[in-house]
Image 1 (cartoon, rainbow, N blue to C red):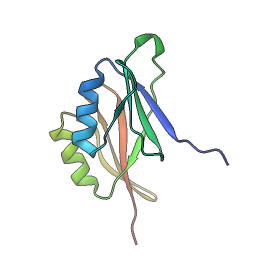
Image 2: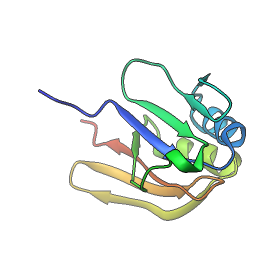
Image 3: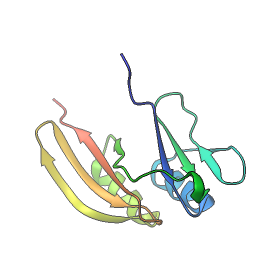
Length: 113
């Protein structure tokens, strides 16, 4: 079965976004040239495309975490802005944020028994 394994964001400042996502979620990035960096976990990875000619359309990536409140606090401390406060839905809870360059992402945690 096919599955999503990579998300790419168009960015204006690759180093700034590497710092933000490293601080907020502990992610490490490999540089692939002067305008591109990506996580390389082998699971679902995130690419940061700094070349405007290669930019992609906006999407809403959603990140799963253990503690929603801790993740929200780390996002804000790293320079992100919460755009949708924590809310519940069948199966879990989530919030949305914008990173320092305006990309909107979601963060969620599933209901735990």
